[in-house]
Length: 150
Image (cartoon, rainbow, N blue to C red; front, top):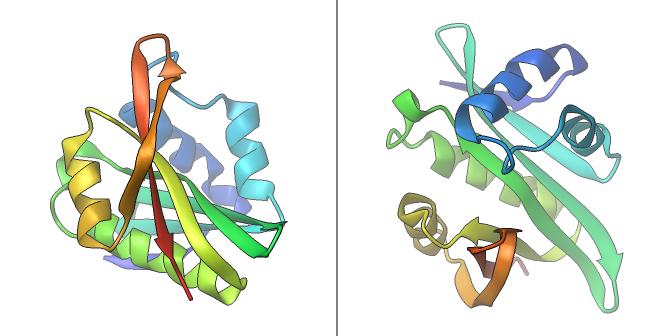
């Protein structure tokens, strides 16, 4: 598996993964995804295997009172490649990018029914900080996870 930073010519393949991993209305729009990958204070990591993109992760950061906070916008791996450590390596890469940016903490939302993702985040030191009802849609809540980076 090869890991590298996003390039603009990756957008079509990246969005194809978004379409594979999420159905409407849970899928990011083209314009929102484009905004995420083009954000100056962010990093998008790509996972490639057999000359094809198999996953990606996006982390963004911003100044808040007391320092810089980072947020994982999304971490996606195509279904046929899950359970092979790709998500863990993408997570490691976005954490490193957040640290390099000076972030003191890293946060994310995860669908409360996505047990595989929850296990991944907990194995990597993320702790639950509550939940948000209807985060993704009416009746579809999220758990909030965070991790100190200092």
